[in-house]
Amino acid sequence: MTRIRLGVNIDHVATVRNARGGEWPDPVRAAELAVAAGADGVTAHLREDRRHIRDADIEALNALCRRLSKPLNFEMAVTDEMREIGLRILPHAACLVPERREERTTEGGLDAAGQHNRVAALVREFNAAGIRSSLFIEANPTQIRAAADMQAPVVELHTGAWCDALAEGRTEEAAAIWEQLQAGAHLADDLGLEVHAGHGLTFDTARAIAAIPQIRELNIGHFLIGEAIFTGLGPAIARMRQSIDEGRAAFDHRHRL
Ligand code: PXP
Figure 1 (cartoon, rainbow, N blue to C red):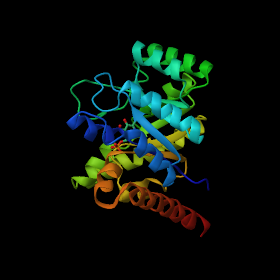
Figure 2: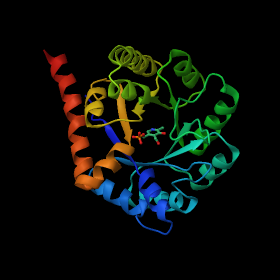
Figure 3: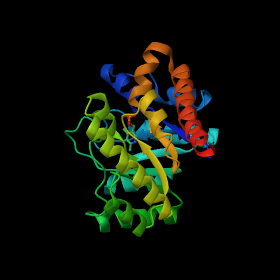
Figure 4: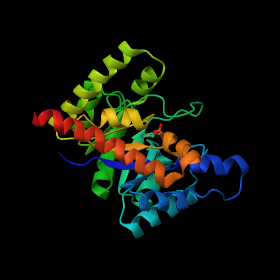
């Protein structure tokens, strides 16, 4: 089975930097280190309010990724401002996310079905420009079908609610969301979409979700940057890589029996 790619989201290095102003710690240095430690790509979210990543960061990250021949996954809201930035810098991929100013993080998935025309127009433009759009959606059949209808190449399934339910001991709810994630990954793959997943993942949840065979990429940020405080970024990424590979190997093993 194919190895799962690990995209490392470095937004929260910028959060720490911005807490004091100035230039330190530098998210570009973190991205370089992440790649050296085995990240397959770099993810960064330029939010409307620029609370962590700034315009200059995204330009520098794009240049770094080009130099290192690694994909930059530019997370962005579906707005005219972000569309223009995307078309100017031409990242490898753009992950389209919903955004609300008052949220602490991206709380729900994009309503690709409800906002079909707006999202479809952007996906069309990005497809033409060679940018791989990835729709960050809940594992919900209506959203997955909408993504396929508008010819988005990729969906990223939102794992946040599953991770929260597990962390808070809501096991029945976690099990129900797990079923949706499995079924969603299966459906998306059947419809020809490449399947990614992310949000709230830890070593344990990344290991578990790596067993879903259709998943090709995981995007992980907050937990890794937090772990880096204790172990350093390189070892945190190496351990995450190991968790993901263990999850996938467990699947392979079960299916060879
Ligand atoms: N994928 C998407 C689309 C996200 O918005 C985020 C958070 O920025 C992540 C993955 C990573 O989530 P976390 O920081 O919780 O690992």
